[in-house]
Length: 51
Image (tube, rainbow, N blue to C red; front, side):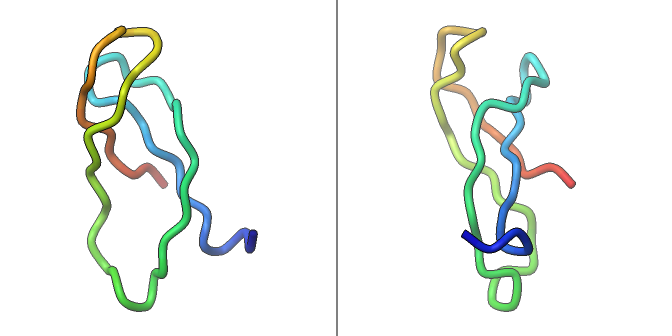
């Protein structure tokens, strides 16, 4: 996996980085926001892309 396509997904409630994903930065300019399961919150919460 190429490093320039990797992104980190952070939980919006507890601010913990739980997931790593990849995206095509040429076609998707906006930051991703995906509902994922957070292990520390023990609930499904929105995760936003960080820097």
